Amino acid sequence: MDATGINAADQGLRAWAQGVYSQEAAVELLIRTGWTRRCAFKDDVVNDDNGRPWVEWDRLKQILDGDLPSAILAASGGELRVLRLAHCIAAGDLGTLLPGLDRTAAALVLAAVAHANGSHEHNGALEQNPNGRLVDDAGNRYTLAALGSLHPWPDNEPH
Image 1 (cartoon, rainbow, N blue to C red):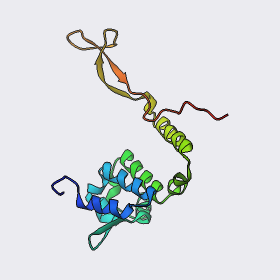
Image 2 (image 1 turned 60 degrees about the vertical axis):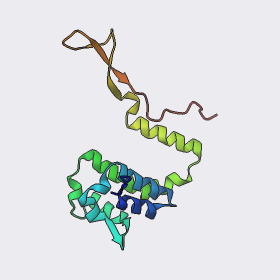
Image 3 (image 1 turned 120 degrees about the vertical axis):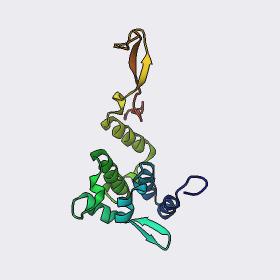
Image 4 (image 1 turned 180 degrees about the vertical axis):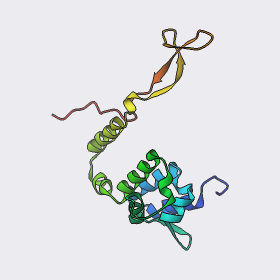
């Protein structure tokens, strides 16, 4: 990492993906979920041509499909889903579908993904509430805060 805390390899991957929105999104997802800091990921799917890294999407798909051995597969189910999503955004079906959506359709897709994830039912931190069902040893009552959807459905419906 440099003085600003930015990893040079991550900067290189961002530079490689720049200009292709689906690859930019996939690379950013990999960076922000920590995959680009994992040795197995870097060793098995990140190529480096003289300091210019790039992701070998086809190789990642082969690993995820079980066609190639890799320590990447030792990750949790949720972590592997993130990798599959990154691949689908960059090189799979989502990579060909998403760029053609208009803004209205994109908002609906985001809402559908948030809903499928169950984000509309996620809970946050405990909040003190006199009517709460959770009671601590001192008799204080709490409830779990409702967070709402990560991306709510738009108000407008088709006519």
